Image 1 (tube, protein in one colour):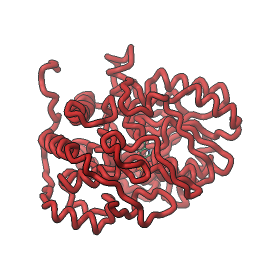
Image 2 (cartoon, helix red, strand yellow):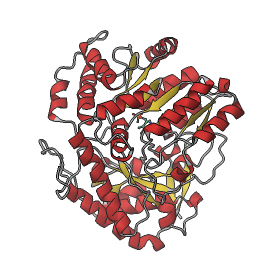
Image 3 (cartoon, rainbow, N blue to C red):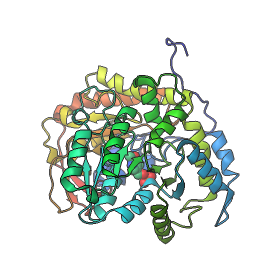
Image 4 (cartoon, protein in one colour):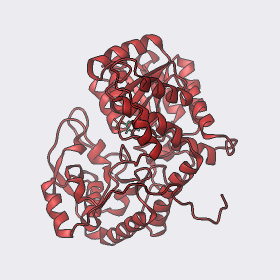
Length: 458
Ligand SMILES: *Cc1c(COP(=O)(O)O)cnc(C)c1O
């Protein structure tokens, strides 16, 4: 496409969903009822919902058509084989085990591999990944490169693993206590930043030296492949499916949420080569998810995922996807709002700690900013910081490495004028920043507190 043209949404709208305007007073009441936790809101009180890109995207005409092909046989459904083949076309692992979401794949894998005394390295564990590792008594260690921890620092592959730190961890703990090495593509909690093939190859070498398996948390594999194509020397003309297969060839398995780059509203899978481990995982699957040819999904869901996997590697889609996220981030950056740079694939991350220096990390600057965006403009983002990661298994609390607010962009859902509105609201909130105050937690569960904690403004 010629460079001077706007990169437009490569689709027309086929069926519309109304969104509801609310007043500031209505939003204030809604916030109070929700305990100042945006997860507690009724979604119809939200105007632009950037809480997550997980399962919130619009399915295509062809996915809805595929749903009609869903076969609901309990065992051996043709929809399972369509799903398995679509997965293996990109990730040729020997075993493909469907699950209802990514976290179910995590729970099964870490139940089989985790346990007290074990340590699982990752560039950055996603919240459910960390929780599932820790639930088994194992330790989750984040080893992203130092550049990945500095929001303002520009690096083409800020999601890369610190290979020397990985080597040191394995030596210190002993390879017998490291059952698997994980790499998350793209690095969601670290800003949606990509991992290069060069880095994956280096991680693979470390794993080989110690005889350890390497798994991908591959939720945003297509977005990662697009970044490889546009940023890594030698890949500029390589088809996206080939880049994905090259990523897969470096790994022994993967966990996946089909709610991200599966372009589906539900689903996930665990895929791997190890026959004995796959057998143990299938037995755990039957216990909580279902028979191995449906894994807690309906046949129609498996069909929607199979079609989604064909669409997500389309170049026009990925060019639009990555460009439209950058459009939001670059506009905020140009307006002087501190954002994680460069702009990631699926979301723009506001640096709340930099924008709200008067709010100490343990008074949750990210939560304060997320609440202000809702109050002022009906926009729902999510805190990724001390609320999400600040509490440790022993109940103690410390500041997370960063206090961010993630504005995640649902796939194929909002138009450019919706995003222009978001830009206006964030710029307005930035002018109010010196007046914003922090919050305190009045109730919280032992794990994954950000979903259900209740707050009070200070
Ligand atoms: C969403 C996500 C998960 C968990 O997937 P669910 O489908 O939400 O259970 C795991 N890892 C990463 C990086 C994710 O983004």
